[in-house]
Image (cartoon, rainbow, N blue to C red; front, side, top):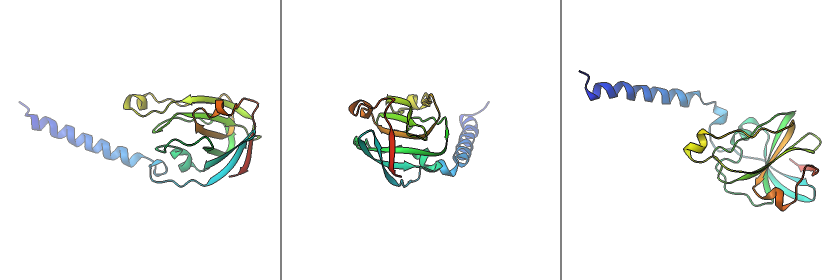
Length: 163
């Protein structure tokens, strides 16, 4: 007859091995070490926004994770080298966001409002990516309510002042 210890030891060893393999398999770019973001300034219609610039893969992976809510005059702009279908998700976010996808000319291709964060284990398991309806080169994340407060529409335009 198998004793309790004889049954638990192999299970514990397997759990430790799986945990170590899982940690080692995480790409170093996506580990959540501190990431510094350059700052820039953009304008949508007549609204000027100070932005954190996510222009490299490690910065885009980190995004606004674990940050406190931003005032309406601040946000994060994701900058890509080429136009494409770029999705975002709300993993480890601390506040709801409005998201705006722009093409290379600064025209809006997709808008999402009031996207809730995925914080609880159940929400994290079901956390879905937000996929735009068109190709973009820039994505702006701002605190939820920004789009309504500043009357941003599909006709609004992005102007990059400095990034």
